[in-house]
Length: 96
Image 1 (cartoon, helix red, strand yellow):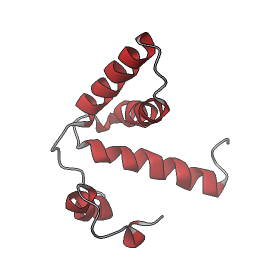
Image 2 (tube, one colour; image 1 turned 180 degrees about the vertical axis):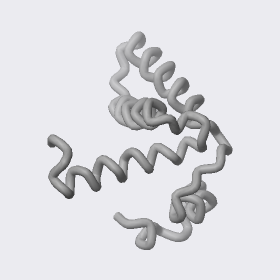
Image 3 (spheres, one colour; image 1 turned 90 degrees about the horizontal axis):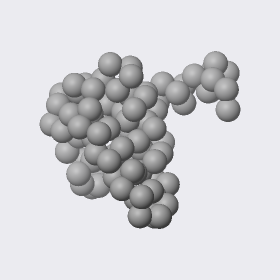
Image 4 (cartoon, one colour; image 1 turned 135 degrees about the horizontal axis):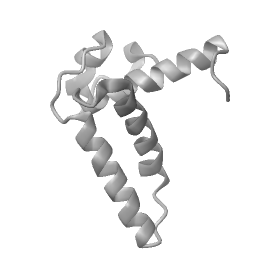
């Protein structure tokens, strides 16, 4: 769904909407910290025998964004790598 179709009343995303729409991700909660937290949460869940698929998926995107050099930006910068991957797939440049 394109940003212009996002619900206008979905906090806390509503507070980040303007920055996301223009592709700016000033740090509020650094992506590197969110990546670390996702890894710690996934490891603890796995150790307890709990399947947290959503945190694993989010962790994959966060790690990809970290490798892309976005670790110092806000965690919402992971959208840049998600959308880039989607755009690549639409152009036929990414493997499914």
